[in-house]
Length: 83
Image (cartoon, rainbow, N blue to C red; front, side):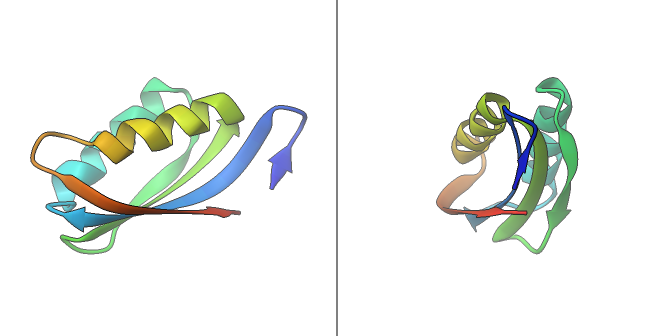
C-alpha cells in the first residue's frame, strides 16, 4: 500500500535458521535506526515477520539489511507483501 508519494507499508516474512529472539531484536533495532514505523513478530526459531512503513528506499534498506541479518542467523527466504 502506498502512503503519500514515496512511502509504503509492507510485511516482510524472513525464514531460515536461528531467526529467533536475536534476529527479532536485530530487526527491531533496524526499524528504529531507519526511522520506520512498524513491529517485529517472532514466530519461532525459523521465522520472523516484520511490518514496516515509511519511505520506500528505507523499507528496501531494511529488507536488505535483515536479509544479511546478524552473524548467527541464516536467512534462506524473504517474502514481501503489501499491507
